[in-house]
Amino acid sequence: MSEHHSGPVETGASMNYGEHEKTYGLFIAATKYSTVFLVALLVAMAAGFFGGAGFIGGLIVLIVLTAAGIFMMR
Image 1 (spheres, rainbow, N blue to C red):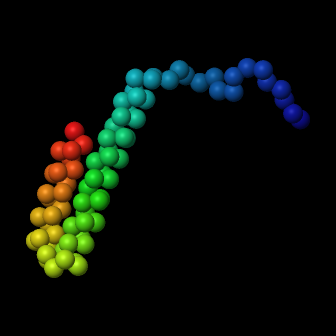
Image 2: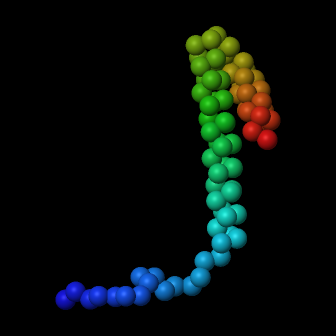
Image 3: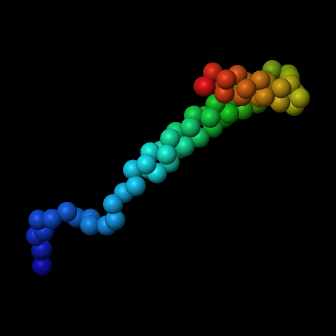
């Protein structure tokens, strides 16, 4: 029932490490910038709902914080 193998488990095609590194870099960049946007969105929602800034004020806070965060990430 039990088979003993001494070779590698996977014998598929070789990996393209250049594409792997490129995909990983894009994933990390998307994660960083989406985190900046989501934090800015939460702060803008707090300013709009609890700070009395309203929709337009919250939108301005969102745009300013997103631009500042992207500028600081570069």
